[in-house]
Image (cartoon, rainbow, N blue to C red):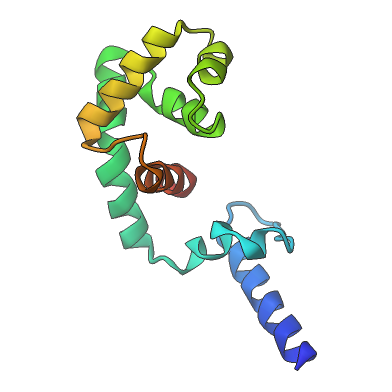
Length: 128
């Protein structure tokens, strides 16, 4: 029974590593107990559609206005939604950060106060 579990874990690790760019990659046991394990099983066309729906409006806005919404979103999520830590990290006034997050929400129809929407953005950024 333990051997079967180890074999399954090795197969999952191989799939995770194979989904990464580059000639050589590896996947550790930490990744096998996280969302990273699930991403290689999502078909490419579904991944592209999901990320496009969430991130393309932000990318287009960034291209037109140099607003840096994508880097702001990444930093906001990395700071666990902390306004003060994120503003400090980006060297912005907290009101500027609030404006940018508001623009992200307006362009996508999502609410970054909701866990589900944070998770969707997190996954979209990881898959893009």
